[in-house]
Image (cartoon, rainbow, N blue to C red; front, side):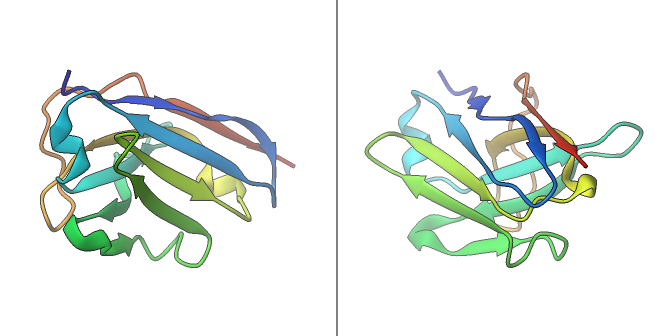
Length: 119
């Protein structure tokens, strides 16, 4: 199964935290770059963070210092720890295999996981 499954979203107050998970059974997820993306209503999907081989990570400017992407190779899972959430972080979050610059590689997307930030 190459298609990853996202989970961990929910409703959180502004300033709160959530940890998203991206799990897949395909072994390629252990080594390939993986990106987290989000899409808010009326907006294009955007790259939030991605992790490449060796553990190098990159973040969108809007989330630097607040979000952390990490990989658990044993569990074949990539996480996105989101702290100090803001209203503008509300979106559906997706993960996907990515190339080194962070462009998504899989044409199909999963269902994503909804993140809602309340006042």
